[in-house]
Image 1 (cartoon, rainbow, N blue to C red):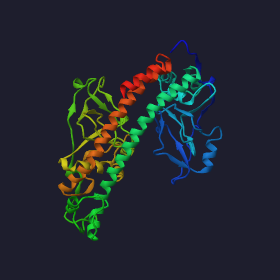
Image 2 (cartoon, rainbow, N blue to C red):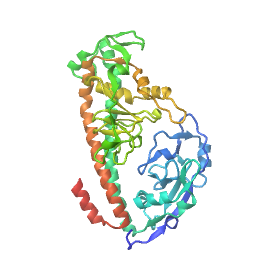
Image 3 (tube, helix red, strand yellow):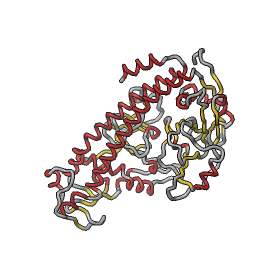
Length: 433
């Protein structure tokens, strides 16, 4: 750290440091305005509201007696996992579950966003690790140590500048990911309309022109339904299973072939409920055989399938053996296979069939039996044609977000420590983007 900047205990520059209530809050099975943030909701500097559990008003008030969340609070996970950091943007109705620390910066001397970025720096990550307690089951950070982490304290105007610069990069990364989520939703909606709700067939059966498609595409859809084991389906379409049109790639890469130039995807890199890969690593140092995949393959997390980890591979590489590498048997069925594997109904099906009490996994044999309606290859190819531009933009967004993420992660420790000044960082950003 720069000798020009003092290093202080975090408790000296925070007006509030609170450990959450360390017991399980009673949840309800229906939606309420009150949601519990768990350690799994805190990742990569952000607080995700996906998969939050709900509580009633009385529980919320009881669990927030010591402190309610405010905008700008910084969260730190003490256990499972250790050292994840999040920034509170929307505090209304949120409260903290177990094993999370809440920090509120004294804004006269510490910018909340600066604290947020300091906690993500390598020097603090090292402190989190060095302060781990040794529990009988899992490691953790002791509550008392959470008050004593040492952080650099540059002048407040420098903190403001660092926070603004890194925040601008994070905003661009967030925008790219939000754009990808929109593109993904459009592709999903089209698939559902054509192959789940059968909207074009219904329109033709009622004498209407199907909406949003040209006459050539509309002509490929039948104009009536017929009975099947899955209920009414478009006339002439087959009833089968996913395995009729999909398969897994089983090529293995030996340890001797793994090196730093090979990209590696583990379950930890795959976000929940997003087709866009959020990060990846390299194969250097991996000590066991991995599965190979190619660009455009569908990566399906088979461990705890209810986590809904399914992405389209934006490059070739290797992945954890807890990831199924899925492909269409014929290229025309790529979109149909991908959208089925990503659907909520298939994820629920996979969850029901997963085996193992502590580490439930689903296998390809069971996934292949998932019942589907199989359209003709020419109609399936039309889905590919429609969603290909969307998927291409998503892939471009993934790579651009990764470039910005790497730039941010390179600048962050140097800015925090004072090794790099703001004008120099701004010049580096202009060169890179």
